[in-house]
Image (cartoon, rainbow, N blue to C red; front, side):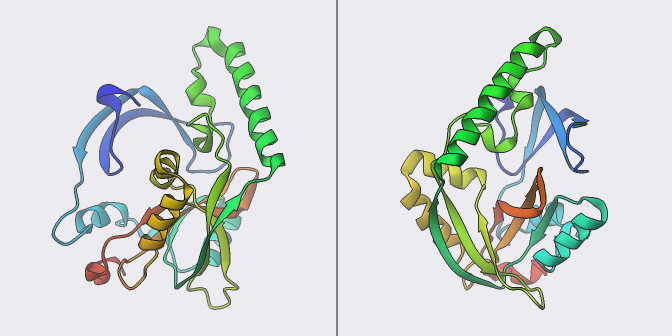
Amino acid sequence: MEGEQKFKGYQWIKAKIVRDLRDPRPESHRVEENSIVCEEVIPTTKDEWGKRAEILFRDKSWLFDSVEDLRAKEREDRTSLGVVEPLKILGIKIKDRDEEEKQTFEQKLEFLKKEDEARQAQNVLFEELLPPEMKSLRYVPSRLEIHWQCHGKDCKTHNMQILDWGLIELQGREGIERAKEKLESICNLDKYTLKFFLGNIHNHPTSFTIVGLWYPKRVTDLLFR
């Protein structure tokens, strides 16, 4: 985004939205980006992220005790987003993506460009056709992956890639090692009350990945339980 429509991570916006009929997931909408109006920024406060938490977590329906519970909800009604708190962080590693993933990215990008050209007469913008992971229009050759355990009674641990926008932008600016260092700091559960925003993959709805990170300092731990 540019100019007055460039918004921060925790900021209210007004915008025109429409259900994405190409995507059966109930949370999937398209935003008309030219309609975005930026409003109040929700800052960090003395109680850490208390005000942000009041807004984000007032609806308890998207808070889950475990990944297994979130997957069960997906099977029930196609829920594709949820928040899960990790019990343990078992490891963080850099995972290089294989050549097949790169070719898939390039093929999908080419398809979307052609689709955009075909729809220019209908004023459908190329930006509207792009899935979130391709907004930057550049291939990311490696990603960070977390091995973690949730609070599920029978959790066998999870390996999930990180698609958090801020972390990927840091990786683009300063490199994957700097992003890994930042993630390792955030994943210190003695210091931060960490939660993962999990989202699934359109073509693989039971496969969830980490699309966002919540990490206020642990002094406010009781506010988020």
